[in-house]
Length: 242
Image (cartoon, rainbow, N blue to C red; front, side, top):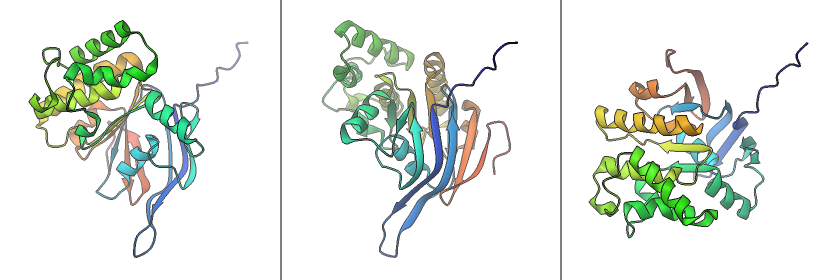
């Protein structure tokens, strides 16, 4: 009799996550009892109206904000109990983040190629290794002809592609994207997500994508719908979305 196969632990495990902010009228609960399991390689879209807690969830997963209650584990890291040094290492090695203001992760004084090299400098990798990684990412994201360009010379879609390359430079286990396609037309948005699908499909990187655009859900495996800081639905991408 074969021994029973134990399924691997999820890359992301969230239980009863709560996050509250102070306000003049009293505390505001941005997240209230959120539960989530996410396996490696899974692509998850997070949807909901403004103020539903989407960006707060990303900030907690990125290690930028600690949970007020509940448990958050990512790749074996307990995000509620990290020292400052452990939190810095977590953000450098485990997670990649593209903010809605995607320019945050781009250094304007560096070229496109240098921007993707920069995050790798603290990783102890050889110069050749860093350059190969940057070349592969930029080619895959259609920036191979823009290596020496400055960020100010890029089009809006090229700048977003660069932000994604920077976020992937250290090979994160988890990639967080906050409204990465906002303001793009349908063709540009789909082109960016198609190229991203090819990259993360090879590396088994899990992706959490915040979006308002239900048309992009065919690029993900699951959809998490938030309302007032709580989970309204967690469904397969092909299912009806409330």
